[in-house]
Image (cartoon, rainbow, N blue to C red; front, side, top):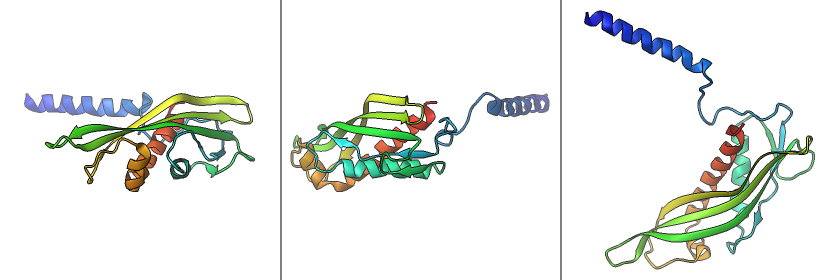
Amino acid sequence: MSTRREFLRAASLMASGLALPACGYSLAGRGSFLPASIKVIGVPMFTNNTPIFEVEKRITPRVISEFIGRGKYTVKPDANNVDALLTGEISSISVTPATFTDERQASKYVITVVTKIEFKDVKADKVLWSNPYLAYREDYEVSNTASITDPAAFLGQDVNALDRLAIELARSIVSAILEAF
């Protein structure tokens, strides 16, 4: 009796496994549903509307690298001779204490970056995807427990935090664009 039950369970699992590809399931981050006419994507330098010096020079190249890493597109750092154009604006960056030591000094901060992103099919003159308030948050431990509430001071001291933030923000932007279709 248990053999029959095991056989039915195995058959059921196999049938559901075969049905998954037919239902449209796929691995996240691997597909792209952009129009086939888009082969070259322009990603000019993001606009920086924050007091953080040259933060756009850390984020924009990461977005370009993330598109290139997907392997399907030629990516240019400008808007000339492209099929699609990604424009971005870094609206704000804030640093907020999240956890404190027994001495009441911040030991972990939450950095929030707010961007405005637009992805446009240049040839069709049509916005394919946009988000006027794409926020990305990341927690960061600090080794120096001095009070740091100024984002410029915090990111100036911890360049690695800014690099990690730029990588994750770029992944978030590119995934949202490629997987939104």
